[in-house]
Length: 281
Length: 297
Image 1 (cartoon, rainbow over the protein chains, first blue to last red):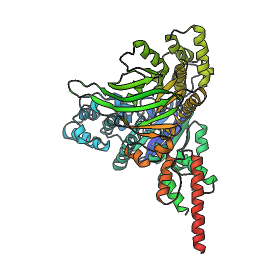
Image 2: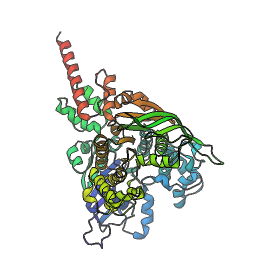
Image 3: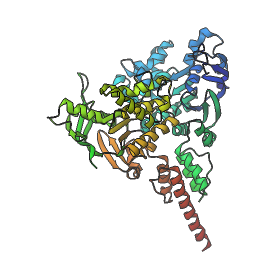
């Protein structure tokens, strides 16, 4: 079954203003459950609007949003449940930490869902582990942690709610290379072990190439393509035309072909490129 | 060339309170930045990059060590407030978040903000604003609403605001981190042009190795110290040291590194995909020709 399905969704901000342009224009997507999907697009392409559709923060003007095959607006009064189902980690979530200890901060979401006692404790510890936080950090103040650690506390807070779908807006923005690997690696591990469907929004083509199974490309309020990662990045010209890019290694592979060493255009990680080049010998 | 910035043994700690000890952010940093140069600063989060930037802009003063900006020693006991103010006018900074540094509603008013604070005559402000907007390619947006711009355009407006103040040195503190690929390309292009065509000294703090590869020189910071200092070729030429410092190298360098370990001789310091591909193709073809000959004999 599709974890996420949008059918002909259209949405316009400030509809009352004449000449308002839709932020989502007849958008349809299907995302299978259990994988990691990337969402890329230029600034203003509609990514954030789409993300807010998925957990019911915005309601489509027309069209349907389905999570696990269920129309989330079928019973508008139950939209709170949808928000527990689709966990959203916003940009720079470390600014939203507030509790006195890391453990309390992580526990805030699941507590609001009605969990307590051992079950709550178990959720907190598990979420901390997936996010790469060690036990000794749990009783510290979140404000004494480094930026990367704070980001992981915020992530753990959403993971602890056990969402069916985890949506992350620029989870690695502003982190150094090691921090990026830690957080994105943790998300991948979490998705693989728990079977949670993950949707990552990012401007980093390199990160998307490394961690996503498939990629949705948005441009001007529409879906330009939704294909497996290798195929998306082999279409460099279409991506550059809408203000995006391909990883440096993909460009290198394209140039290699011109110099007579053809390793294909669907190259998007350095390991794969090196392997393909060595196969030529 | 005269150094626009000279630092000798700078140290800085963030003060602690009853519960926590002071945190040492810089411990003995020395370097010179020649006027007109383009230097990238790399380092993992918490390595001291932004603390250094704040000292160079004189937002904070060092605990010890000496710092000269544009020929004035601002750490000298004789330095007056006027000296520090004058030095501050020479060094500008562009921050990470485009939405945190636009102060006016109309683009040209935002660009004029700094000049107005300098108390320049209106005709001079008009001239500088027009020139600055032209320099970042935003002339046609002069009278547009600033909030409607894309992230890359907002960063260009922020850059125009600092150019209009005739800065001799501009520090970019992860100014492309929040931009989409197109925005990043636009801003990097402007930074390179400012440096090449107008001789503005550029200090680029970044986590993007591809951007750092465009600089003349890279400083790598770790635990409040400079651990590597050299051209991109030299710095990225030792990938192991970079990985150990929690950093990365451009993907072209990583590819070359992996191929070298498999016995294919390609240089580590080709950062342009085309240059790298040319060298790899040549090396692969050399190797094939060699083994082809080997087969015949």
